[in-house]
Image (cartoon, rainbow over all chains, first blue to last red; front, side, top):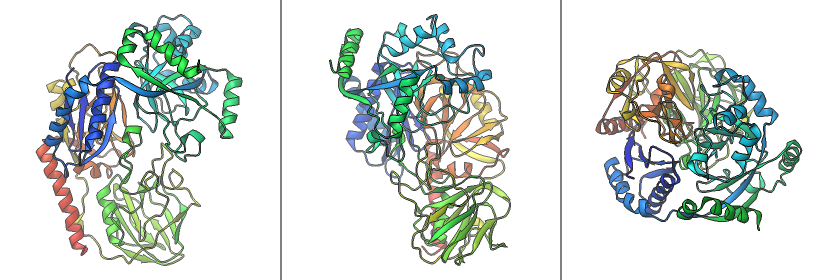
Length: 291
Length: 322
């Protein structure tokens, strides 16, 4: 695939690796942004990988837009050929599906939804042909997800499901975005899941909520002292369905700052994954569960 | 030295020139929406141009000083009053301990910048004192000011002078926002592109530090395509991508939104291009219902406009003997 470059005003270059989402496109985007960072180009101020594209912000007083464009174009061949593998982490995220807080919120915004007679989960289960909410939750939480972008708001991860394309869950966004979403809502739009790091507007369907903080501007949470945002592109996530009791216990642990997230080192190779998804995911689960 | 907040205004926040370097984590640039006015306010009170100031939108706060200082108010025409007596904007004036600064009604523009000699001395967060309210980061406790807040102010020097109207920079009527087409511009028809520039838009009530929404123009017509995997079903949807600062997204093809200093850093709506860096200050001075037009420019014109803005700042520095 050849990258489509475009200037975003006089301070940005935007590169679209592919119109469609794929892990191949993600890895090319990540390789490009890694190459830009490694090149240490004077005048580059922000380097942002995204799902299937990336963005570089620059100061045109320091580097001419056309000169930077040429530098980026020169990196394209190497980026496309680079080894799509990562030393990364697998992170377990407890999720209270069908929780009362996202339910209260979705009921307030029913008129902005495709099917006001159903909850977001009921709707998602139906249009994915899964019959019941329980089946949908199982499909959502049984296999790992890949963090293919961080952004929208501070520390929000976009997650791509690590299964064959025909099994990937897809749900449209709300017809009109909500003005409110509870903090730490697990949402889904298009083929991406996300975790809303802060309370605010949102258009993704709401499935549940996690008790686990993923962004802390005060850097008080034990595992967010060094970095206020938990997620990096390339992280792998496994959802762990929990009930009300476990949720309440986790919240208490968070409040007392003794919540210990399960985070384990892992490796990921796109070629191995494409050869054997079930096998790759099983190995990731071993890495997570220490077996 | 400190400043006590007697009343906070509508939404008054601590801002400096911003917090670059963290956009890849979804942490926006933040900083003043009209950084030209912010720089000039600092110049007038003898601060570094990037010192932290207060940004007040539509309605000013009421403040009390605990020690002598110099103050200057720039930006939109929000008339400052010292102990009830009106003072000129874009001009440095001294205050004493116990003096109160309040504001009359906004006459034009949208945002005023209140600089105090020494600068607002809240802690640096990721290299900036700017407030990012959505992320509860920076500024005073990560939020807009409230009555009863007390803000620390650094040690300052003497202020000096005033800046005449000819050296200021404010939007016209209608505001002309120059933009470089690009990003996903190819997704709309040539006819839709022509209308986008021909129409006069109006600032919608949903206009804040995240973005400015415009309405009243013609809905966009998209070039038909089969939506790519992962993008979503609306023709305005794309696979979620980065949103540049200044980018113009058009959800559903109806109402363009220009993202500003507290931008959401990415999402799934196509963008038509970006408002050029030189004109972002002007957006920060638009009130709801203000008419605006988008004007197509080339990269060369965008860079020339950028230099013009820098030259305008240089003229102010020169005028103030800096």
